[in-house]
Length: 414
Image (cartoon, rainbow, N blue to C red; front, side, top):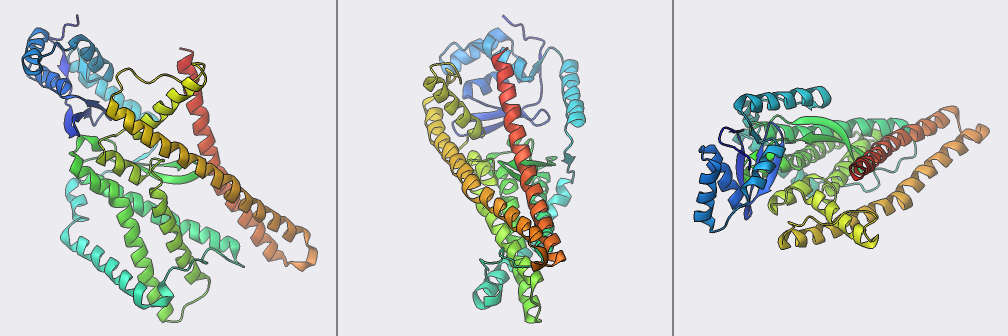
């Protein structure tokens, strides 16, 4: 039996999560779903009760003999329980130092007081005014409406591509800025890095510690990015109105129209919640399932084990509840179908389109005097930049898959 009389429990946040509780530590960024009994044991540890006293308390309150030894071992393995306060402080400091050394993402620091100013009534009023004005202009002014042909260009390919790429990068950073400011308002220290969603390169805001906040307070940081996207579209619509009113036209106007299309595509992409998009995290929060993605992978891994008669994959954990199993079945179906559709889109749409760009560039180069020199340079540069963006995303995606398979192989080999 583990003697815990002199053990030290680190500060833990305990937030209701459906019928269970989400328990963890923001500094370690470790959170676990625990039943009421587990939370009661933690409360008893905080109060300084011995193991025998906790057993008696749980027996009186829940009318059952709880396996406290196993639960204490779990707390020790999770890094929530230590032999002394000095050991706890040393472990957290070591974790923080290691994270700072290995995590190259940019840490965003803003005081909650300053961050709250971005959500004050004057700012909210400005946001609503911009959104309302954009809706009004969209209804009354045909020249600011969505141009579905904005991506189709016949000249200045490279300038168009690079300008749109730069503009969208700025909008993407504003999107992440929304997440980071909303997180800072709750006292979090978000991290910003570059990652990928399948083969698409994206900026990623890590709202570490958000599960230490009450469920209702998590929604704004999770939704803030899409709210900023709507504000960006509104500002572009207003800019289009003034520019076209003064007779401005040509490539600049088309770039702004294409930027609106790209932001709308990005917003729709957020609803591909089979990936870890904003909507995925909103849905996870709403359904009280912070690990939907991992649950889907676990369920599909179990099916792989069945189909291969245990040669691959792994069985479901023995403690999987009926509710968890139902969630796994539903989300794993969405997870699998979404990836099949995405890969089909990659094979049938994206790769052929890139190949067509390559053919156009090659034909321009080999056509002799039929195409002028700068048009050839334009087409070739356009293809090269397009390929680099696509290739960079594919590299991140395939490297992530390779590392995932390698980790699983190492686990399997012990």
